[in-house]
Image 1 (cartoon, rainbow, N blue to C red):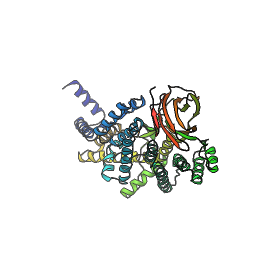
Image 2: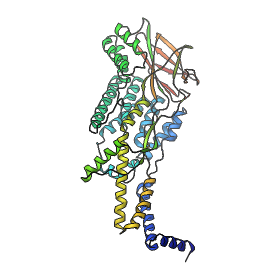
Image 3: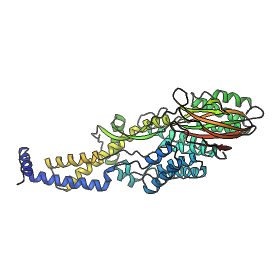
Image 4: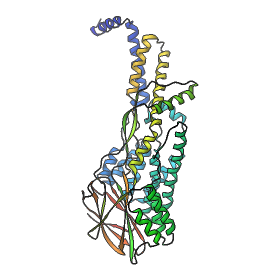
Length: 472
């Protein structure tokens, strides 16, 4: 008899176990774990979009678009977030039509998804959330409409106000649904679904540009001041619109909208179960089985919103070599994402707890089917359950090229062509990167728009109507 087998037999006997039954149990455990690997693919989530995102952040928009397009076509599970990132890359590269098409298709796709897909949910209960159909987070649904508004503004602006109102309406719908769901569990949503100021601001800008609807513009700016109290220019916007003056004679207005910093992404975190999460899970188990059962789970892996560090805090604007102004935060996308993720956390943890319960039930059923009982069943349950739980991963798919903040600055300029330079500002409002130049045509009494992307030290793109990019 080989030495290893004899040692195994001696230890089994010392434990009071039949070594043949132990060996058989371990063989069954290995077989069961192998089946789990085959069924779940080890639940490994590889970020298929990482290379395309890095290329975007480095300013290589052509490579970014090619890599993201390939990722969207190659992996069905990563397709939806890949197309959202691809839309941002198209927009930054100046292909507004392609960006708008992808954003509209994505918006409609997520709107059509059923509230609950039983087959999809059942599959993920025995694997993890990486196997679920990708569903856009609440903040992502709002930002699809907000980015559509900026996309329209960078071209002809025809649909910008309509898209902005869609964003405001969607946020209100999500807030209502979250409030009703939380009320059933004696919970509160708090400020997670506070309206975004971008929507009324765009309405005010566009209403004011008609030189007629100043009252509508003033009311819109008042909402901006209410929803984003830190937006200091709102006071002068209200005063100007109330006075019915768009700009001085012979002047027009340049609006620079800046997508600043790295936006929210998802990272895996081991979260402790909370009383709210366990209560939600217990009610779900009670509803399904007819009896209350509090799962004995201490911690689970979940996806947490993370804002990657970025040196970019704003954009400085130079016009005809003169430093004139800096952008101000209009909508904090990162804060919006974090607040909503915090509000959703009890349900996220409850899902993970329910998944553990389902897996424990599956392991127990497998042990019974193999005729195990007593100590053998315990060994099998511990080994298979531990492997299954260790292989579980959080779903880290997300729209990764959103900005941390959407900022804006309004500048009145004499009619004519002007050379505009944009440079990234650091935490002390000092320039930290090279100046990116373009030429802008300003028309008497009209608005012109620039849309810039500044995820790090460099302005990677400038697009807008009446804009002419010039070499660095």
